[in-house]
Length: 462
Ligand SMILES: Cc1ncc(COP(=O)(O)O)c(C=O)c1O
Ligand SMILES: N[C@@H](CCOP(=O)(O)O)C(=O)O
Image (cartoon, rainbow, N blue to C red; front, side, top):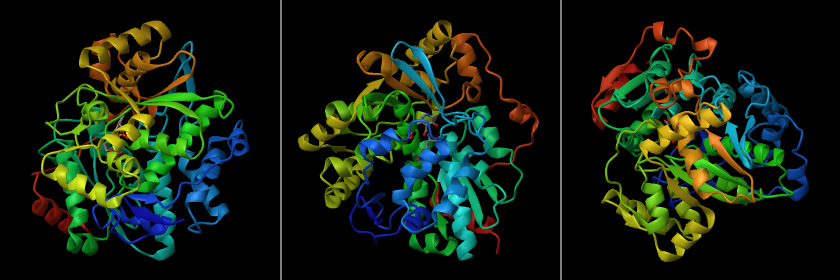
């Protein structure tokens, strides 16, 4: 399996090199040259197998000869061993025809653990074999950072620097990033919002001297392996509701477009998905683009679902690549226009996007009201991101088709918003109950590329 860039001008890479290199050298994002299909029978045969076995069967075709089957089985087993639920991604029924896919039973209580725990194991196995060392730099609005730090803390051949927007993540998210004591992990609080942090990370990848000097790697969803790992739970949940013999729909709380894009890949692999619904908070650039064709970032507004406070949605580029008929030059042109303020999607591409994705927006008031109503009706305490999904799913769903809404984080990561909405305090799981007593280690940084690069170079072991 070979991987190509959305902008068409970067070297074609293997799975392993794609995983270790992050952003393509032309600024684009890597995608597999072809998307492998699973047959009707292969999908049906996923029914009743463990999450780990399903993960093996779904991801194996993408890996080429990077690992033997045996090695890959062991990597997957280690990745999901620490999850707090035997099913890994259990489904709960909310009401007739509406199901919640709980993706928060991993070590940092958000869906990011599904990919990050796996990537931690993949990196470790690959780097042990090659003897190489990498420097991971990531941007986070809260959950990617904590999942990355958890997955890579203490690893010999990896240093991790996570940029998070100062004052714009929840206290639990911040503490998950700032309290690990291992010297190879570094939390950096940047003056700015998530889009600034993500832009600086991409700048570092595009600064080839820096990139090559430090051995830069990325674990944001620019990394194809992140998206790939997230494809798995679309299959396992759909199959448990009767796929491939019947269609299901998904609603996905969306910010950087990685999770919903994994759903799109699942559909292209043959999973019979009816609606794929993008659910946004008040930072609704994706909903506006999918309904009007205009993609013009106009400033991030803080919300009670802070992990989705994003206006420059990285993986939308991958969706645009397919919507423009796999035309890398057209994507590169749009990304240039974005740098200058924004772009309009062509009519043909908009139609293609609308054939793949529906969308809706949830206000702050509706987010709180959905948390309150859901706990009253079904005893399920939602985090604000999942509530955005549930509200939009209720607005758009077709009662004839089961709807699965992705519950992307545990309510205990956002206790203030949840308690205000529902009057219930969500306690942290026991393993984390002393989180508020642990001491924090964080460095405040300006939104300045040179300053951040210098700090990283100083901190790296010489
Ligand atoms: C809890 C939570 N929900 C939803 C999202 C949005 O996911 P994506 O960025 O893949 O669209 C995020 C951030 O990624 C998140 O942390
Ligand atoms: N919401 C994310 C933002 C980064 O997204 P990613 O999927 O590209 O890593 C977060 O929690 O950090």
